Structure formats: C-alpha cells, structure tokens
Length: 254
Image 1 (cartoon, rainbow, N blue to C red):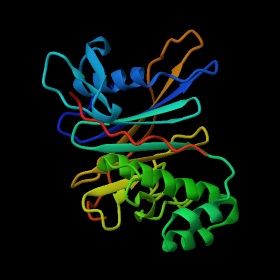
Image 2: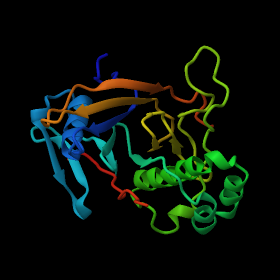
Image 3: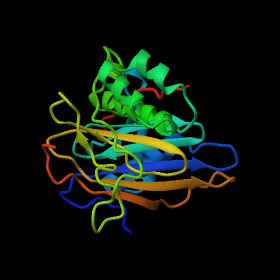
C-alpha cells in the first residue's frame, strides 16, 4: 500500500512504533517518517526541531511546509499522529488493572463517573482509559493539555468492545470513528483499534471527521526501523454532525 496521502483528502495518519530488545523507537524517527509521508519527501530531507515549550516542529528546510503532529509514549511504544489539514492530538496508554471507580470519582465529571459505575466490572479499567486518553488527545489538539479543568471536559461515551459490527465492514458500529465532543465546536475524538494491549485516542479540530490510517513500525535489535505495515483503517463518519500521563504536545510544521 502506498503511504502517500491521497491528494485533497484530509486523513490522520497514526504510526505505532514498537521497539524490540527493550528499546523504544526514538520519537524523532517516527516524526521524520510522518513528515516524509505527508510532504512527499525523503526522510533525510525532513527537519525535526523544537519550538516554544519544547514542542517538536516537523518540516523541510527548503520550502514553507506545515505538518501538524502529536506524540505520546507508553513503555516501549511511541505513537505519532500527523495531519496536514489542521490540529491533531494523540494519546496512548497500556491496558492494565486500575481502581477505575475511585479514579473516575476523583477526576471525572459526575455524569462520566456514573457511566463508569454502570459499566461491566471486567471492562471498567479499559473504559476508564478510553475516557482518559480521549481527554488527553483533545487537550493536545487544542494545545492546552489537561490544564484548566481538562479532565472535567466531557467526552463522547466510548464505543464498547464487542458491539455489533456494521454490515459489510470489519469494524464495530462506532468503533474508532471520530465523534463530536459534547460542547466542543469542531472537536472530534475516537479510538482506532491498534491491538497489542494499547488504548489509543485520536482527536482533531476541524469541520469534518477525517478517516484514520493506522501504521505499525518495528525497530529491530540493531536499531533498524522497518517499513510501516498498515494495521487498520477507520473511515470518516458519514455525518459531520454527529500511573503515567503522556505530556501534551501539539505541533505545527516549521
């Protein structure tokens, strides 16, 4: 599959970098991969720098280019989301046991805490992480992180795992689609399936909900970063109406 973006189509590309041999893939390598893919240039031509507040900047030195990216980390996994059409945010957490009810009551709005309490006990930790990553990703897309009450910002109820699948597709109804954030004009968030025990949220700012392409990249023990392998595609919504916390980073290309 060609990794070059389709001309004229707003798409969010998500690279999931998994390291081998106990070492994560350096975020800079995935940022260069993202810049090369979206700008149609060789990775050697991509410049990765840092702007105010330490935010990474992705672009080229010879043209006025702009790539919006967001970075998140969990253990040996690095996730980079990139988009040309506007701000994007991404957050990743590894699924693990959590005191979901206690954490929900402490950090979430009462309605979300009540929703969490009504969820099946065996899936509450995952549901808590879906809400958490959604809030992180939206905060990054807005460029504010979780400051100023970001954890109390309401999110659309995450699509549950195992819900009925849409006819003729391989994905659940509502699964991974970028859905409107309540009260957030032009804000959308969703959870594209990535597997490997990871919960990933992607958020965008814009009038429409773009499709999401998920690409997996692995680094061998000798430090060689392999070619990206497409692991998933989440189509755009048909209607536009519809332990460790990752650091909030939203990026504009230089």
